[in-house]
Image (cartoon, rainbow, N blue to C red):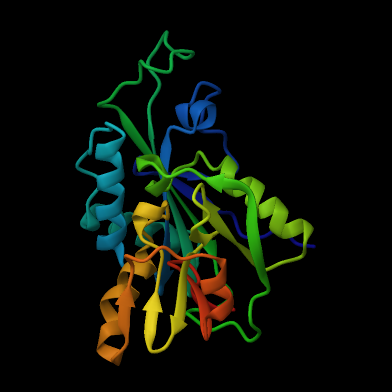
Length: 265
């Protein structure tokens, strides 16, 4: 088999071969999960919904007491994404992984409380997708409930970070049972989201989705649908806790995320 085309990543604005080592062992993202991540859909070298992604990223950075540098702007990130996709010769659909992390401080590699608040780095990586645009899945997703480890409800629950052990365990459960996804619950037994997506239920011309107060990630595609669905004549309800019986009685169930769009169950 011939080797694939050489891939590049973008580290702090510089383009580096993807197989070159760029992070040290004391990197805070690796050591502590002290990093945020955005998965951005791109088509034709253009990032989709970038303003919404960056607004969420900035809010999370502020919550985590990270300085928000000037590079966290649509103009800068959009330009770098376009350059990266051209460099990697990805001209169709792509998923862009944007990771922002706090830099380590010399001599404090093992100190949780001594990050350099002003020193922030970022990495952009690109992965080609099978389709240029959002396509509905040809077969409904097989799902189940994951209740072995309820998701705690706190401010960190709504942050999309690299500290993802909870989702790793849920995805192992999904894989062991040969499912397409599984639905997570919080400590009250309320439905929260799936391993990779936000959750929507349709019943009696009403569309239900768990509130962020239940512990779900405020997804980009979720935000878009919440603004679009009322124009179809359906009512959006996000202030009612959802339980398993709501899932079972729903007329339609679908999952959403920025990389895949909508996945019906």
